[in-house]
Amino acid sequence: MRPLGARLIKYVLSRGEMPYAKLMKVLFLIDRHLYLRHGYTVFAWRLYKYGPFSSQVLDALSELEAEGRVEARVERRGDGYSVAYRLEPQAAPELPPEVKEAADRALAQWADKELGELIKHVYGLEEVREARPGALLLRDLEREAAILIGLGAAAEEAYRREEEPMPIFKRIAELRQRVLDDALGGEARADEISAAVSEALRRYTPYVEEAIKEIIEAGADPVKTALDNAVLEYSEAVEDGEALGEGEWAGKLYRLMVALFTKYTKISGECEATCPRSAAERLAKLANLELAAAALLRLRRSGREEAAELGRVIDEVFSV
Image (cartoon, rainbow, N blue to C red):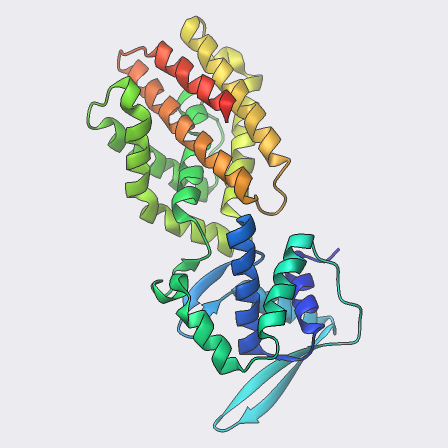
């Protein structure tokens, strides 16, 4: 089966020929509805001079055109040219129910409207109006930053992998250390660690945005990418539990690793190319708990063995 983006484009064009500018904005409105209702998008979007833009839309159109499934028709208009796309005769593709519902909604409202009216509507949307040029659109950056920084934090503090991480995860690990330094910089008590971690995460969200952009531009979903990496981290940590040591603290730490591995593996089953909102929200909660556990591991290395507080964090992990 073709990628979802190509199928969505074909579905939209099955309603009739559509100019490039209108197609781009209709696809954005479809993704906006999906994001608000379900927490994910088919394409990655940024704000450019002429409104919301996705290079993934252009890539999908190029592939469909090269295969002869979509025709691009160029017309001269005034001093320039315009491009319109039409679907070669074929059946409309199948879409997931929520994507079809979003597409039908947008097409019913905008397919027959003038481009100027559509542009005015899209430019008037709050997230478009308030975004800076080049900014990611339809993303919960604070939540995604928490997930990227938090997932794998406890494993990194307790169990060092021998191989060098990919460059993107190396940069994320460096940011994670800065977040932990920040959270522990105020000599927070053990029972204040979670709040200190959450506040530090908010301060570092802008620094994670570039990592999020890089993952998106590579054609992946940041949340799913972080989740897959965390599952790998914890599968190794659980398999090599002896490396965590012995005693009460090591026992609690191993229980934490098993709990996180179990949670992440279960959530991974809910995520395909992207993670739905409910899964991402649970991952964000686990990410904060992971960072709190990583901070407690640091406190232990400095002579403060907060086993009771680590036990509380483990109980919270099981409740997510």
